[in-house]
Image (cartoon, rainbow, N blue to C red; front, side):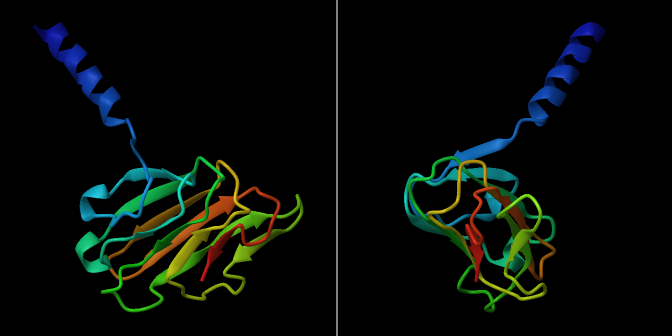
Length: 151
């Protein structure tokens, strides 16, 4: 019985490490329950909406990964929140020497993240909150500045 308990504990640890992955194929109202999800997107043009910051609460996060380069995809903060509650930046590697930032001025708040037609598979953004602001960081290796635009 002790061995069965150990085997079950090992299985539990293994399955607890699996990521929640969801393909976004049409516009989605992202919910509080989507915390910890890795969203894949890019095949369909759509605008997705984050949950309200206060409802999401401290520690809510998601990651967005472009898995198709077909369409521009956007992620916006909830209309019920105050404007421009996203901070941080996305680095676009235009050449090997100097990454470009979006927004270009550090500390500039924004409310919309767009994977443009210049973004490439594997480009990503991570979004998390402290219950007051959305924090954004990400990278694009497309070779084009603002392939992922923060505005």
